Length: 115
Figure 1 (cartoon, helix red, strand yellow):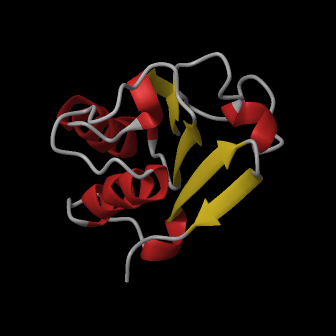
Figure 2: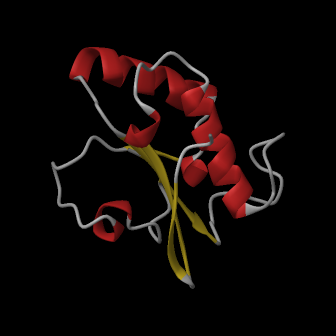
Figure 3: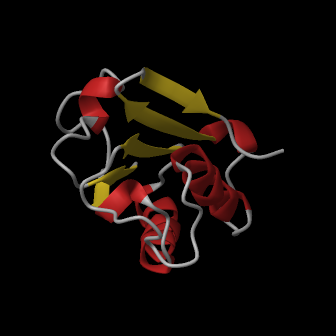
């Protein structure tokens, strides 16, 4: 799981998971950056990770508008951009094993991988 490090992002709780039930990598915004992508490839290879969930939320106190540079401003588009990065690298995961979750005041939205 790649999740936002903001304390308002309750990634495990939103997914009904407890401590030690998922490998969690936290960064600003839960965005799949180059560093996060490299870590995911390693986690797949070394730890045998078989599913990936990207957890982001809005509003996010760790991201200013336009951050990360070059990423979409719209929260749902930013989540979709992170999912797209995952299907474009050789993780050898089937598309159904990659999901995104966007949390916020309106509840949770589950997003599948791009077709």
